[in-house]
Image 1: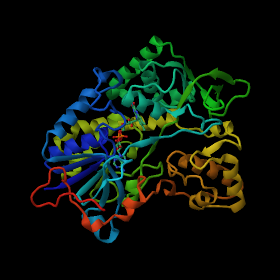
Image 2: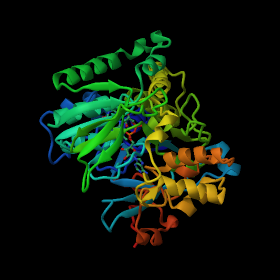
Image 3: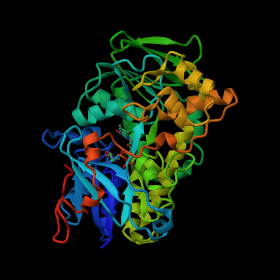
Image 4: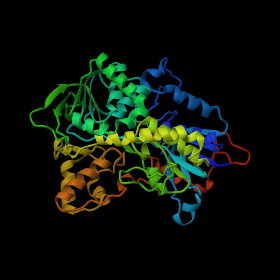
Length: 500
Ligand SMILES: Cc1cc2nc3c(=O)[nH]c(=O)nc-3n(C[C@H](O)[C@H](O)[C@H](O)COP(=O)(O)OP(=O)(O)OC[C@H]3O[C@@H](n4cnc5c(N)ncnc54)[C@H](O)[C@@H]3O)c2cc1C
């Protein structure tokens, strides 16, 4: 029987696992988190359940139905707290055509514990559904305590029922700001305003062309109305063409400056307004988590997403991708892509009747990704709100001025050398927060001095995909591999071993 490994148990991964099981494949579903659901269905821990989990969620019953189906299915092995930390690249000469598996190296157990089990899995097919990180543009003061990414605020609200502050400003760009404001209000914060950098004309240009293509997405309009109602109920001002351009405070944020911005997001002088606050949540979109597809050798497209065909197969046979790593299209696109990937990875055909609805939904909702980008995509004028002193890489405390002067002085033409000479991206987050920003900033400044920044995918290349202890690395022995399923070992399979 075909063995399909699904990495990531958010909407895309759950849908993929269900579909692969529907085709009769043996499935292993892994997630680094302690619970299934990913970012969208992040919820209170099972030992502290909420009496009303649906309050902060859309589609909760879709999630619970998938979870129950997989948890009660002996053909599906579920591993939570399982971090895929490395993957052996499929060798083009022999494996690319035949679809032979890569070796997937996993650590299972609490991330901050010292006794994680090491496992190596060699499935017949892999589906990457690893989602995305928040993207936040820097501004003066964004390294102060009290400044959060919009996703972190959402994670606190959904995963802990905590608001990140009492009086909170939300800023950035994209539809995601709306659920963040709603969750903050529902967890007791006063939201002082939502400041969306895109202007009205930009939103019209991004969202309105070919409106008939949005007909299949009417439930999104219902969600939007719900958020609008939430804004009215909680009296949350929503301002287009405004950006949070600075945060102020000594030990923590005490106020922010909000300014009107032009169509390129360049702040308009004289429009600045200072707003006292104790927390600010800022998000300018998402960055896909590409480490594992890159390590596997999957082609990455111009927009920094995994390139997939109609079957969601990557450039490598038997390696599929679904959800935010193929484009930022929201939960419905992730679900549709997951279903298609799972079905095809398990040997199904795109023309099969079971996939008709998913293929239709994918067409509708992946169109969203292009609209989101057209309406809310980052514009170059934002660099006008940073100064030479603004920290760009928070882990290594590298200010913009140092990045710029080092880039010019060394005439660097590659991000790797710039990373080594400036240290930007070398800290604990390994460039997950600042990588794209560094790439754009240095690309711009080098262009101005006649240099060229040639990137490719270097900013997302992390052969060790997650932080791990040196002892874990030292104890790694791929030959003592354990094939899944390991939760319910079968007689012909070895049980789990841990590297001492
Ligand atoms: C912090 C955050 C909060 C969000 N909240 C919302 C929201 O409230 N509403 C909304 O509409 N959209 C939200 N989004 C956008 C949302 O992620 C997507 O709409 C949708 O959840 C994407 O589904 P996905 O399955 O592609 O990815 P995700 O839901 O992100 O799932 C990916 C999963 O992969 C796992 N994973 C990643 N790398 C590894 C690894 N190496 N090993 C093992 N597991 C791994 C992660 O733990 C995660 O559970 C949020 C995004 C982020 C980053």
